[in-house]
Each structure stands twice: as structure tokens, then as C-alpha cells.
Amino acid sequence: MLYVFVYGTLRAGEINDIGRAAARNQIDTPRLIGSTSTHGRLYDFGRYPGLVPDGSAGAVRGDVYEIDEALVPVLDEIEGIYPGGDGLFLSKQITVMLNDRPVQCLFYPVGPESVANRARIQGGDWIAYRVARDAEPELKYGS
Image 1 (cartoon, one colour):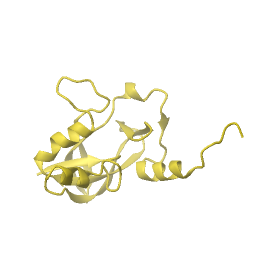
Image 2 (cartoon, rainbow, N blue to C red):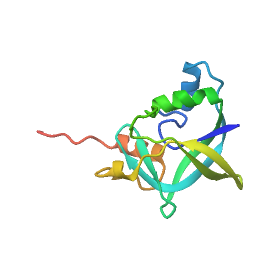
Image 3 (cartoon, rainbow, N blue to C red):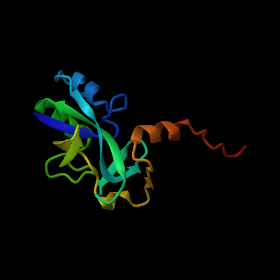
Image 4 (cartoon, rainbow, N blue to C red):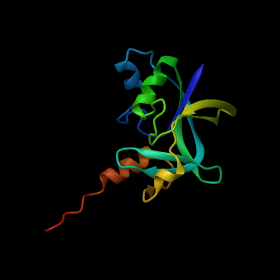
């Protein structure tokens, strides 16, 4: 079994929803195993977040899915992971606790060097942050 921990736009209902990504590519629907968190710092990159793992930081909320191995190249493409390429996201392994048991997962963090001048997302939940941020009225200039 292959698991993935998703914390941003791959979460259900987001722009890169993992279930829709699988369906577009005729791959078996990922099975949600549960929600959990990992320690790290979450940053706002505009349309998506970036997670820097950090064992001394707060919790970052995410979901664990069991996936078909055929979905990995699709996820890699969404996250800009290419052989020999230097992209923003990295393809790594992480162990999260789910229902009191450790689960090793694929996940896509960013390197600490990539977050300079980015707003940190307090609270560790991309969806809650994005919804609140997007609900704020835009400032009108020249009025």
C-alpha cells in the first residue's frame, strides 16, 4: 500500500483535489484514511501553500490517502517534480501518526530557502486560512 500526506491544494475540494486528479487520469480513486497533522511551518505562495518540516514548530493539518502507485507521476507533475529538475516542491517521505499508529507517506514539502518573504500561515490549516484570506474585501485604491 502506498500512502500520501496532503496538506494544501491536493486536499479534497481544493484546486488540485487528489480525487479529481486521479479521475482525470483514469486511476483508481484514492481512499481517505484519515486526517492528521505533522510539525512544520506553512507558508502562503498565493494559489498554494508550502510546508517546511520542522519538528519544533506547530502542527500542520493534512489528510492521508491510500493511492494507486500510478497516481504518483500525476502528483509529481502537479507539484513540478521532474528527474534532475530543481523545482519548488520536493518529493519526500514522512511518518505521521494516524489512529495511534505510524504511517509512512509520500509528501511534497518545500525547502526552507524558498520561503523568504512569504507570509507564514498561522494555525497550520491551508483550507481555513485560504477561505478566510479570500473572504477579506480587497482594498480599493484611487477611490
